[in-house]
Image (cartoon, rainbow, N blue to C red; front, side, top):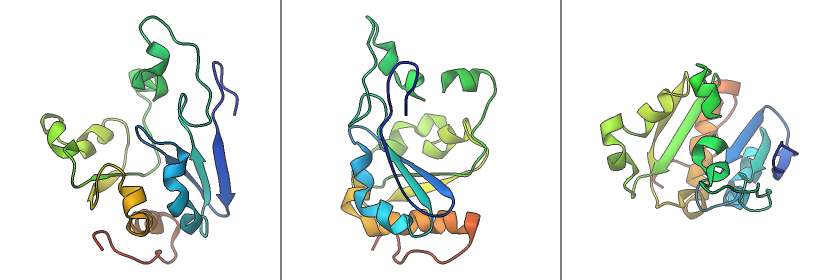
Length: 162
């Protein structure tokens, strides 16, 4: 996909309602490789590389590196204009990391996402920073359970923490 200042690479597969999978730092779309196939049984899965990662383009930088700031990468103008994410949002994070403690003053990860989105669910899950790769079946099960409420159907097997 061509943007104003770079290109974004994405793999698309499956059938059904669209499902966008975004990676974290320092990953690429490949972090979803063991999960996307299971989800593609019920969804059209889009796994993209954020700008500057993987096969996506790298916009020209500036002295303050603002093209690579998380604000530039994550629609700040939208928040300033009161726009919110209207679709359901699931936030999962490492139960073995410090994320929950790092953002305790803000109310934790869910409170931060609730500033951006109307409906937010989530929890810490077993594993370290790379839990989708460490525990793909359990991660796929958590995603499936979340989306099951949105489109109906049967969850992909497994439980968080197996």
